[in-house]
Image (tube, rainbow, N blue to C red; front, side, top):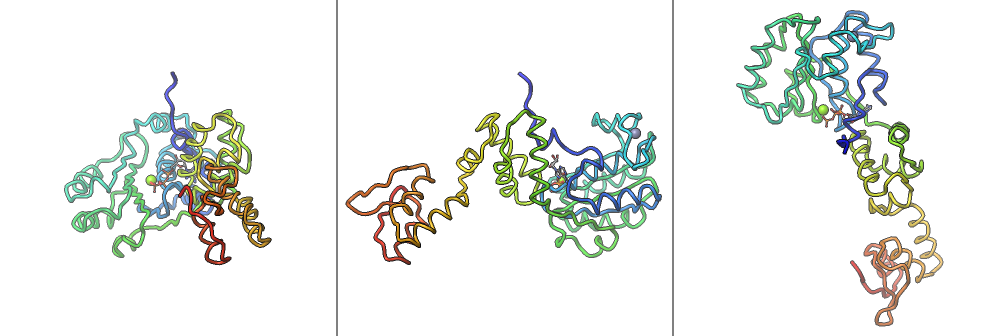
Length: 311
Ligand SMILES: Nc1ncnc2c1ncn2[C@@H]1O[C@H](COP(=O)(O)OP(=O)(O)OP(=O)(O)O)[C@@H](O)[C@H]1O
Ligand SMILES: [Mg+2]
Ligand SMILES: [Zn+2]
């Protein structure tokens, strides 16, 4: 059996062109590279799963490429690019500050920084979740950030910019990564569905993108989960059932029914959408509704006497 690779990893962008929704950042980085105006310390901020680590890796690969294209993209063919793509480049070092946050971890890194790269021009140090570094580790790091050797580039990444001390902030070129727009996420999901041979309804992908809340990684994880549940036919109905989402039809139906005083329909559609009872029942001769919120609204606001059932 083929190993399953989660979509978020399988479809990690590997060129600037394939990064979605971060146009300003990508353009600024590309211009800095082509104008030879590259800062040595960057801070990539933004919520989870919006492309910080991906862009850091692309930048590292691009500035070491021997055959940069006219569009300032890595060639993916030269010795340096190939070693990057195979994950064996000695020019990119990633440190997860969440689990390596001591002074000793930083000292180890500072030691390495002194040595020039053997292949290519730059060594790139990506420090993820940099806000987790201890105060002492931050202090140890400051001097290196102040006067890094010409071959060293630091990319600090964080989801919590407000936790970075001002002395570090003032030494970095700061890039604020945006939440990825719904439309862009939905389009990307459609592309991946196509690649994976999944027949996905646009509304189904839209709901997944909404649930992903601006994070491409979260959206891709939900997509994988839905495909493993629903198979290659991803319909709107399967997605809302599986995500436990009440869709807009439901709200329109219930509010219309309430406004018209049609209590069986109001309570009944709630039951239907909770997958408990698709028929309306009257245990103890009282209306029954398995959606707590709807039941409460009907009782309190409209004076009905609905049994709590199924919740
Ligand atoms: N802008 C983007 N364009 C295309 N894919 C993206 C983008 N951002 C994230 N992804 C997808 O999500 C995955 C994770 O992205 P990445 O590691 O770059 O996020 P991050 O911002 O570093 O998140 P974290 O804060 O959790 O470290 C990628 O492998 C890719 O599949
Ligand atoms: Mg990251
Ligand atoms: Zn190359």
